[in-house]
Length: 134
Image 1 (cartoon, rainbow, N blue to C red):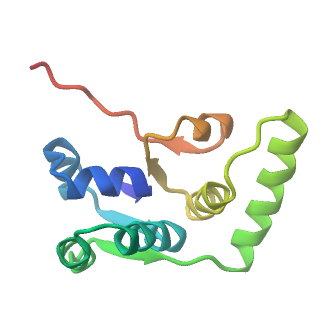
Image 2: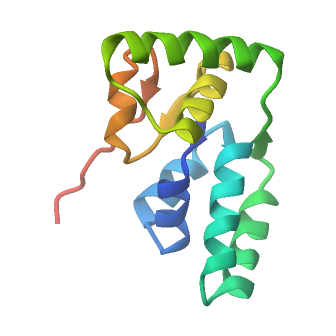
């Protein structure tokens, strides 16, 4: 499995989401889009637990299956197509998330996110979480 993780789910992971941690452990590739990395670091800067959060991020990024996903020229093409598609449909998506979607589409990944606005992009594969019985 090849996945990309959105900022909100990375936050969940750092807060102790065991089911997510177990899922990521069985993935062949886990990509952190550069935009999500920027968002998570901005959250750290504004928070009160910056050293602890920085250690959690460093530990996550040190895993052999985890890499940072960088935008490139093709990402810009995907971004432009998505932007026009969503504008014509009257269903805009926050700009950072549009960049994340463009990178995920470019690299044919499955996105792990809680953000519902990604549903406005039907060609985007999203991870469907399996809820375990309590």
